Length: 232
Image 1 (cartoon, helix red, strand yellow):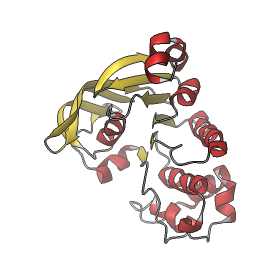
Image 2: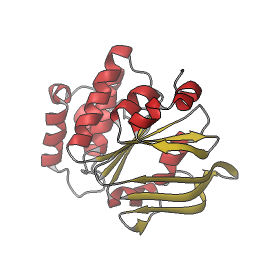
Image 3: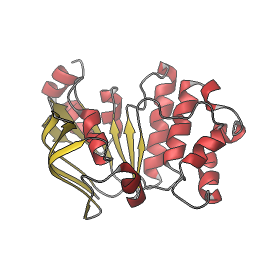
Image 4: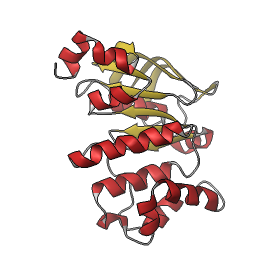
């Protein structure tokens, strides 16, 4: 489904990624981990057209998307949830979700119903201003908005960041459920051990380059990976 090959990318003249390779099959759950500054989020932003493309190629469902703008990429079936500033605080829950379908002539009511079915708390609070909600609830709104167009691939950038510890497992369970329903997931995550326990395949980036790639289970069992990136 997604093929990233020899990707060089960054921001303006600042290069962050050097020859990065990454792939995702249909319905797969893939995690990118690594130390701070490794380029994890830059990989995700590059897929969504938010960086400067300096070389290599990005293909989605057989079509090149590198160099395209986010508003075009979203029409190909990719949803994206940034780490920060991922909701409209002054709008209600329902208004935030409707923004996820802004490229359509009208809001698909079946998609809205599906999001409310997946996140019942959002249905209960559909008229509440999102800025008054907890961090975990705001993350549900952000994910729900990205699901309004029923994407084939969902990009999640550090979804557990800022969440209370007792909410992190719930967030991961919700990502699992989205993936189990057939949506492929690419996730960049600071909680590397938990993410690797749940994924099909993991990539470890270091200084903008691929260091390891294997199943999540194999990476967790690799003593060198555990020592260098997972705290032993």
